[in-house]
Image (tube, rainbow, N blue to C red):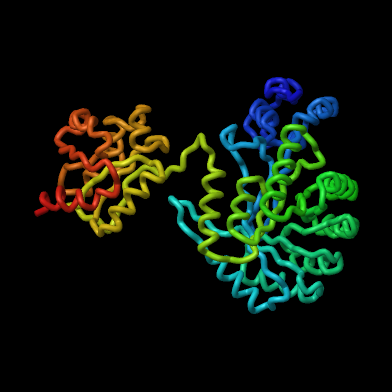
Length: 444
């Protein structure tokens, strides 16, 4: 039976030394109970306590990290099957595959394009996480050259794909300054592959056609001294992938089956399959091609799934300028829920109308939700007006509140003496028309 945080705390040294990275031993115990920390982080725990805490302290899915030039992709440490149960912690890394048979110039061109691709989604910068270099030629020199070409075009993390240990060894040498994922060790080559991974201090993917064979392969590779593993269940197509990845996740979380308690890797030759792998339950997803039209929805899907449902996406409260406003420009109020903010911002910006957007701290809630929860009221709006100093930047005392909270106008008049409270439209899409009619008349 799993131990509670308090039960774990009683077995810790209770010195609050902070060397584990947490402020108190109790905080560390709570993280251990949630499978979000490892017991080895505590340098003072006794051997007796280690034995008692072994099962409780080990995350059901090991955290595996690949890194390059200060950038990293982490997978693992997940504790639930479904996002609504708690949250998902580590977004699956999205990697674009290149083949050494394409030649260095073509590889650099493809990698440069994908590396530069960045999109803004509700204030969050999204892009691919790295590249997978495949030894399609089975030539060690070409593989090393391809790794070098990718490194010349991008500093993002790498996955090296080769079945031949001799070829993989040269690729690992070419990537010696970083920490790539090596793919893959199978039943026929696991011993030399494990030695390469151990020498390179790199994570190793293990690949087998059945879960039983995969579990046995994991045990063999662990005995060879490699702890950071990634599972490839060799699943082809939608049905096989869904079954295999779900079974691995369930066995790790529900049955505490340690041999399959590792992140997984999946390969997708089309966007829909990649979307399935993101949702169920790949830690690394390798895409055959780079296509912005396919990448964008995958990035958005991943961001939405791996956003903590208990922590809404929000922007920083404050005063935002749109289209270079002057002292005559209108002042509009909204909440700091990202989608609400960007809906208003985009409509005003697209209209060409200059304006001041006053974003009140509503704890990341939308207008109606925040109002119903008492997080968006006259006092908060008035406080935002005073704290941002907007009054010193305009030549009028008029403020526009969202139409959905028109009921606040009377209270706001009391909280902001001398100000005229205008009630705006209920929907952001109607803001340009509203400004043209209501504010245009006042300017005229």
